[in-house]
Amino acid sequence: MITVEEFKSKAEIQWCPGCPNHAILQALKMALVELGKAPHEICLVSGIGQAAKLPHYLKCNFFNGLHGRAVSAALGIHVANPELTTIVTTGDGDCYGEGGNHFIHALRRNPDITVIVHNNEYYALTLGQASPTTMPGEKRSLQPKGVEIAPLNMPAIAIAHNCTFVARGFAGDLDHLKSLLVEAIKHTGLSYVDVIQPCITWGIHPMRWYKERVYQLDEEYDPTDRDAALEKTEERTERMPIGVLYRSSPLSLYASRFRKTVTRRPLAELRPLDREKMAGFLSRFRSG
Ligand SMILES: Cc1ncc(C[n+]2csc(CCOP(=O)(O)OP(=O)(O)O)c2C)c(N)n1
Image 1 (tube, rainbow, N blue to C red):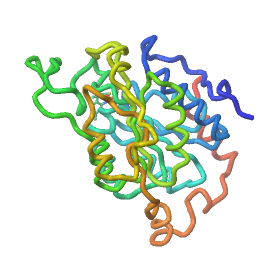
Image 2 (cartoon, helix red, strand yellow):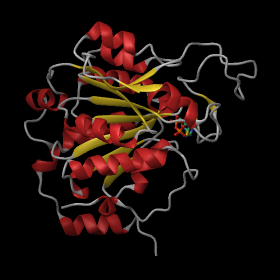
Image 3 (cartoon, rainbow, N blue to C red):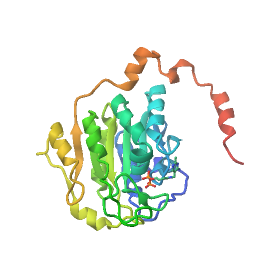
Image 4 (spheres, helix red, strand yellow):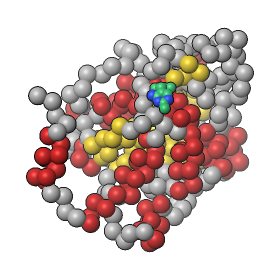
């Protein structure tokens, strides 16, 4: 039986001590353990940013791509090898800003991947500039008089485009987040979890502020009610619901449509892996 310890990588964590990203990393490891996944069965995919460093800190296959392109890379990886559990870890800037276009089109395609967005409402790596989810009125380096435009409501966009699993989690509620990630990874089709991740360096509110506002959706909430789900996505300031906002029956998957029209077998099956050749290739990237 795989343990959380076995997912620990050798890389030294570069996040601020106390950053809620640590909790998201832990929740993901716990979810993978609960699902009985082994490191070789998983591929984490990311772009650029603090959130995008997560794959460095979890032992498994990973691909670190360009800023905003994680979802597109994940789509290709999943189609090439559908046996892998492909998970994107990305920031609000990476996924909704630089990668917004790619994410929206992935929603239309419905690949069987999970997208976890560490939504801290800023471009944290590049020193806290406003991102697509920064709240209006907040003063930032490029908006000294305050952000003037409304934040992007990506969960609503996802629901409008029939994403079959849309959830919101909170990095301050580890067990709840772990359960959401288990559900998301189990889900067939694109599963999308927007995680409230208060930024302790550039943010204006402490964790306590979020804890006072976040509440768990209960059994009375019906995640199959599309209109109710769209309404819930609007609660983002005074009350912040967490849980599965929207869930619908499976739609046709990108990989199976691809199989019918382009190639019957996934790339990973076309030619057996030549391990010797691969080891030679990989050795070029090793130092020392
Ligand atoms: C094409 C491109 N534009 C801009 C940058 C600079 N850049 C690097 S990370 C980043 C912001 C990342 O923000 P987010 O995805 O929210 O992640 P966070 O650091 O907040 O976790 C930016 C703008 C870049 N590397 N590449």
